[in-house]
Length: 212
Image (cartoon, rainbow, N blue to C red):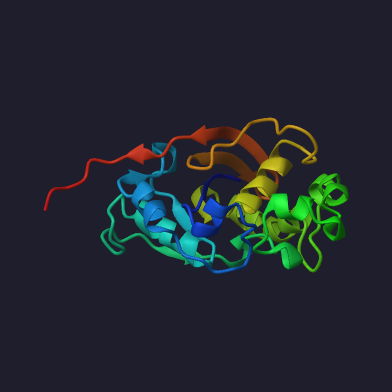
């Protein structure tokens, strides 16, 4: 049995705009982030999919808008959103809330050495991309066993961990595909939690809004 999984990143937050590492800090979408989602829905390849959503508010707000077929108000379309704790963002530990530029200029952060570890990049008191995928694998196995179509609304580091595994990329050097974070990324998942890439950078669909 295999399943189709479409991963979608949450919309923009204030910390995204500032370039801050946003892990478990539960920050909402900005008004601009919400506005950029209104009127959009997942691509047709994911029609009828089951929704799985990170528990963080920025992911839940994104899923509420997109699952409503682009309508701006939660509840305008009766789609069940399953909150999935294993889709929570990577734990950035002591790097939380700091920018890459700040960390790279801080000799005590040892950022260059850490970045050279690729999949094993590990913020102090945090989580590595390899650890993220390890916690995701039971969830992916469940999807592959169930089959069907699934949408995951999550975070950049979560999607990158899945992407890296699908392409056997060690997160060193250039990625095999440059991901566009306002689009969906499609993977095939088997009943062992194995991941294969299907299509990256699938645009969301612009919906025609109903007139009141």
